[in-house]
Amino acid sequence: MRILLLGASGQLGSDIGRLWKDPAVTLITANRLAADVTDGEAVLALVEKTRPEVVINTTAFHNLPVCEQDPETCFRVNVIGGWNVARAAAQHGAAIVQFSTDYVFDGTKGSPYVEEDARRSVNIYGASKIATEDVVRQANAEHLVVRVSGLYGLAGSAGKGGNFVETMLRLAREGNPINVVSDQVTAPTNTAEIAEALLPLVREGARGTIHVAAGEGCSWHTFAGAIFEIAGLSPDLNAVTTAQLGGPVKRPIYSVLGSNRGPSLRHWRAGLERYMREKHG
Ligand SMILES: NC(=O)c1ccc[n+]([C@@H]2O[C@H](COP(=O)([O-])OP(=O)(O)OC[C@H]3O[C@@H](n4cnc5c(N)ncnc54)[C@H](OP(=O)(O)O)[C@@H]3O)[C@@H](O)[C@H]2O)c1
Image (cartoon, rainbow, N blue to C red; front, side):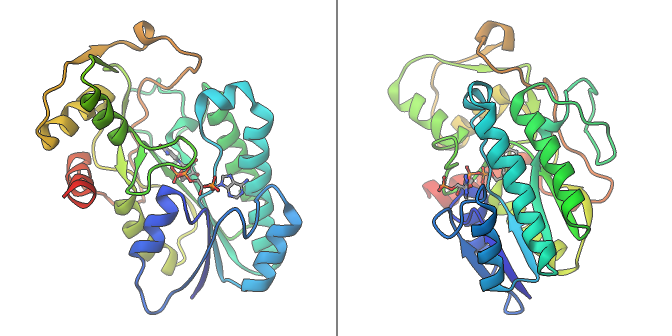
């Protein structure tokens, strides 16, 4: 199976590249230099040249404060980019695997969101990913939309300049008090665990919408506490509320992803322990 992977240098993309060693899969990796997803002709030329049966789009513009300030770029990369990729794949008879987010939900449900739940975003990034899902579905009938949440991976997020785990470890090293929200609950997920769960789905030709996230959710404060515990650090970690922290971006209070049809990933702590072992020994 020939698969073209876009966003190969991102944290999810690089874990797919690192972990997919299936001899039945030829993985062609591409970064922004190979094709900027906002350039429809460049995407089409890349798909034409590489002739994949499946195109995986992990690219995104997802620095949330910047999305609020610059919705045009956010929508251009996510929505137009997703549409360009899905359409180019369709024109060459290839399926599209498009990544999406827990932020398509507003957080008011209070229990894990499943694939069929109604979407309502509370910020620009979430709105752009709802639109991305929709244009991808319209452009290519052979689609798989994969919603994930709270990603961290060995490569660090290109779009956010690192990841939450490394930010916490840096703040602990700097020795100042660390304030982390305790009223936002999600399922932080190691991208390695997603990459491994995705391979059989793609090989089996799964279609539709699917949630792939760590088992169970936790607050970012609980997650930070686990990071420090595993690292053997005891910084001055304080629980704060979203209201106390302020900031320009509204976020869903509860965005744990459950699933009626996706693979069950391990508990978020198991994914974190794996990350700490692989990244920090
Ligand atoms: N990170 C999270 O917490 C999170 C949570 C839920 C869902 N998601 C979704 O999961 C997916 C993967 O996220 P991630 O954390 O792995 O992202 P990431 O590390 O920031 O990687 C995104 C990749 O997209 C590439 N890219 C950005 N704009 C591009 C453009 N115009 N043309 C071509 N490539 C472009 C970047 O390339 P450069 O390095 O050249 O910029 C980067 O390699 C995304 O769809 C994201 O929306 C992420």
